[in-house]
Amino acid sequence: MNSMDATLQAQLNLRREEHLYRTRLNVASGCSSTLSVEGRSLINFCSNDYLGLASHPDISLALKQAADLYGTGSGASHLVSGHSVVHQKLEEQLAQYTGRPRALLFSTGYMANMGVINALVGRRDLVLQDQLNHASLLDGGRLSQADFKRYKHVDMASLEQRLEQSSAERKLIVSDGVFSMDGNLAPLSEISTLAKKHNAWLMVDDAHGVGVLGPQGGGLVEQLGMNLKQVPVLVGTLGKSFGTFGAFVAGSEALIETLIQFSRSYIYTTALPPAVAAATLASLKIVRQESWRRDKLVQLVTRFRRGAEQIGLQLGGSNTPIQPVLINNDAKVMQVGQSLRDAGFLVGAIRPPTVPVGTGRLRITFSADHSEEQVDQLVAALDSLNLRAAI
Ligand SMILES: *Cc1c(COP(=O)(O)O)cnc(C)c1O
Image 1 (cartoon, rainbow, N blue to C red):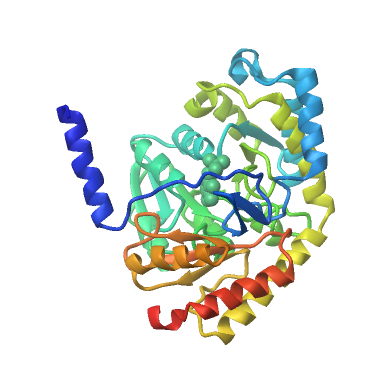
Image 2: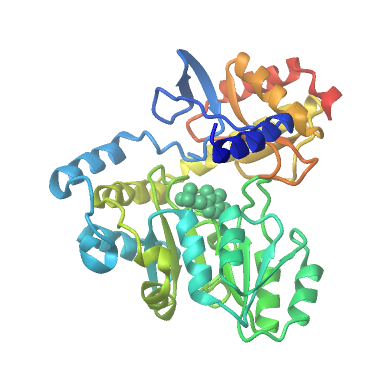
């Protein structure tokens, strides 16, 4: 082996010894409540397709029809010739949906977060982030060259202390809306009050709230009725509840124009295929209108929590479709995940560094596509694993 490979291999071996080595599944079916993996059908409790739209026939049809009209690729970035009338229409509808003056499409949520933070702050500024924010927000904060500090998870005293200590020109507070690994909600009203008091800006990434929370699925911000002043920067993703791909930022005219001018992950990348934007337009209509999908999710989550509590599992404080089951032994998490897979269920087995050391957990997610029977089957499988011993 040459010296690069030898060095890399040693690092990989260490990863394996620490029980942190990651592998991928080869999934032979589309995303729905069951997945075909290595010739077996498994019940899928690990996707973020909360509304069950990733395989919806109306959305597929919109994608196919738009591909016939606009082809498969946009061919250029938005600022050159990649911005199609379909992207424009989707941005207008997303602005209306979120009750903001404008919205801007990004190719992924990861890129949106990197791009927004870096367009808003730089040297001499301050970024304050919840300790459990999504990796893309943390990476965006680090890249920005601003003074980057994390505050204790949903701890307003910790946030205020850091605000008080700073004399930065611009101060940006950044939080997940629904936390991606725990399913709990950020105290957005309190954060927004602190932002106002300390003259800071607030950015909320509601990747897991959009589609799921609020009467029309407008997310945590809609559920709490928070306006543009209270949450000036709102990020949503389209690869989760919307069942398509991409992300958006919603806010003021000045914010969106700033991103178009200065956001490098917006400027220097190829625009999403217009057909994907067309699919998202079809999806948006369903997200807004079919509130039964949100009601069904609430029923499934309630049913699961009741069942899981009866068998003595350690759940998190979440009422969203993200339900962590804590296994207080990071090495054991993989084993439990494998046993569930043997029993026909696919759940997320999450270890550090995705979550803090010692907080390994099953990350079970629900979709409006699941049946009550599938939820009961999952609880029975968890019961048969005798997890109380592990927690
Ligand atoms: C998934 C996720 C992202 C990234 O979105 P992608 O479109 O998948 O890149 C960003 N933020 C949060 C909170 C997420 O859960």
